[in-house]
Image (cartoon, rainbow, N blue to C red):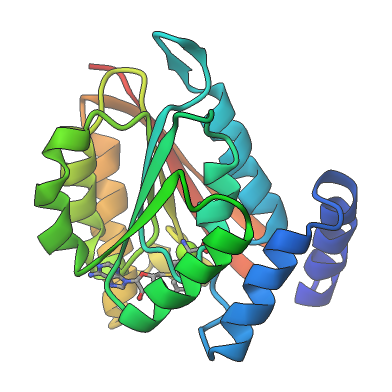
Length: 226
Ligand code: SAH
Ligand code: DHB
Ligand code: MG
């Protein structure tokens, strides 16, 4: 088993389940041209985020109305998630980098989603306290700095309701997550996060390892139960 094989299978699955997607392709091309790192979710992972968003139940039936994303980058996952929203739906995405936010806003507009999506600029720990009036969110996607994941989980719990979904990216870090002595602050951040999520009585949670065109990593999913 090799990374090349994981990638080939990911391409095969993306061809089947995602297909040609001009808005997503353009978002990646513009992100690349602006020098953003290649760390957006994969096409199949983006589709999974969209399916999860469409599956969350609300009082108005299936499908999220309000989404919170922490970590926008070029807006790739933002576009995937925002496509699950109804016409009146809203997604707020928090991004610390002015350059990333600018690239993302253009990508989101090109995807026809500017009316539903707001990219809010600033460090998430500064912008999260401004969101109380927009809560509760039906889904939160945590994908910013790994050192902040525990704080983002605490805020996610404040800003959601029973039935909301909390998804967190990059919780396996090429498997290094099992090393308690890892000197990598991102690994230590996700270790603290996984421990906090597992011990949190207000959610039912698990985490899944993934391989594919982004290598070896994983994501956590939690449903708020009370
Ligand atoms: N969700 C995106 C990828 C996000 S990459 C996708 O899958 O398409 C992580 C992003 O988090 C980067 O753009 C980085 O600038 C941003 N970030 C890092 N620290 C942050 C912070 N403290 N607050 C808000 N955003 C932050
Ligand atoms: C990193 C961040 C991400 O959100 C990701 O999906 C992959 C890598 C990182 O900072 O290394
Ligand atoms: Mg990520």
